[in-house]
Amino acid sequence: MSRRTFFKGSVLAVAAAAAASGATACSTQPEPRGADAEARPLPIPPLYEGELDGNTRRFELTAQEGEFEIVPGTMTKTWGFNGPWLGPTLYMRRGEQIDMTVHNELPEATVVHWHGLHLPATADGGPALMFDPGESWSPSWTVDQAAATCWYHPHPHEKSALHAYRGLAGGIVLDDDDSVFPGLPNDYGVDDIPVIIGDANFTEDGQLDEESGWVGDTPLINGITKPRFEATTRRVRLRVLNGAVLRFRYLTLGAPFHVVATDQGFLESPVEVDGVLLSPGERVEIVVDLEPGKDLTLRDDKLPNWGGLPDKDTAETFGATDVFDLLEIVAPAEDAPASPALADKLVPFELPQPTGVEREFRMKNMEINGKSMDMTRVDFAVDHKGPEIWHVTNENDDMLHNFHVHNARFAVQGVENGEVEFTAGWHDTIEVPPLATVTLLVDIGYYPDPTLAYMYHCHMLNHEDSGMMGQFVVVEPGQEPNLKLPNIHGE
Ligand code: C2O
Ligand code: CU
Ligand code: CU
Image 1 (cartoon, rainbow, N blue to C red):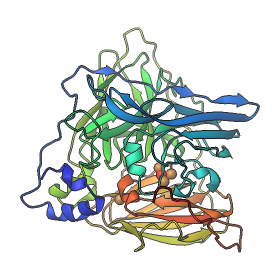
Image 2: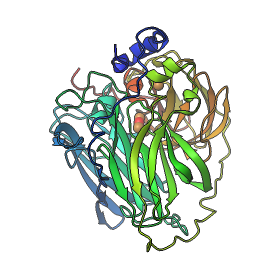
Image 3: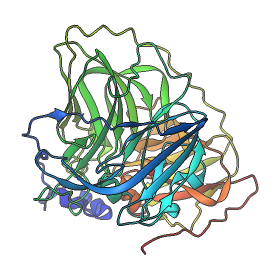
Image 4: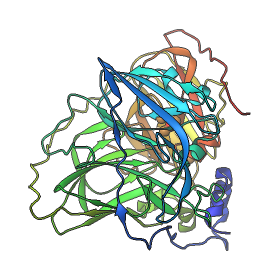
């Protein structure tokens, strides 16, 4: 039994992780596809600024099938937005109204979720909003949050992992008037670079293997294997997204670098680190200083402390012991101009006063608080403005989980019984190590609508698909939830 087959089903993985300490565990470092090929230039997803009409920005996305040379010399059947594989980077500014249209030209129903955005539930793209092949969906909303790197991906009922794995994912650059800082690169594609990390397993004939599980042995950066970025400047800003289905990644560069932003925007000040952990769905913006002649490699290293997993065999089943080269960064030429000092103050971090409402979320196996996702059940209603305190516990001692909340940002107030790598700043997705409790101050967008829910879930996408998700509605004070019956297609 290969390590990959453990991940055929995520529930199976729970048992497998426990059983793995015997003869079946295989401890070899995965051999990525295309590892012997020449490095190729890092593809930069096009920046799609939509069509600006007054204060309204219009976008059109088409989810479609195609094929793409993910690994050199092989065409792989893929899905993408406005192209065969992945999607463009959407650019939006605070205060603008967004009119989005998504066309479904896939053979299956899907829906698109704007991960990290605060918006009405009608625009959020949860599973109740799935739409069929040949149909379109046109949500709109106003951007009302600070500059951040966000992303979009499908959220169909029980199939988010599959649709994202096939290539439906893209970045969102949220901008505002307060985000130009001395020394901070912001020229998209030149010194401000999206780095979308995914992974895949391939079949013999080079197709995406959808049977062998979801911890991909081949890392993909902006959709390809073994990329190289040739810097033309001495400082680059990388907007890194862990878009993988299951893999946690610990990113290092062999030299210290600065974190300037987390999921939901800028930190108060840049923080120097040697590495940063990204669980699936998380983003981080980092600033890397390059010296001519000294190339760097963005590497995915072993998770510190195996991510809190109890032993090496269990850690291996989650890929926590693997080491991969992700992206070669070629230093600029000698004559590249020096960079001005990086600003030491970014955006003030102001914690709003909590309202006194507290909630508890216990994640275990594929359930939260002992329940599996049910689209007809409202797990709770938020009937007020202002933040709540949420205590999130991973009750599995042998599984990684993380926690994501739609239409919200949160600050980490404390971590008990475990270690979270990077707690500063505003997040919307965070690791919850085995047996740890993470306490969050959750600031939820207030768009009352008793008829449609927002989700919270483990963002290891096939844990989500296996039921590790719940839903809440935002209502006016005293209003009762009243869900429109979800429209589950194809079942
Ligand atoms: Cu990116 Cu409900 O998730
Ligand atoms: Cu989300
Ligand atoms: Cu999980």
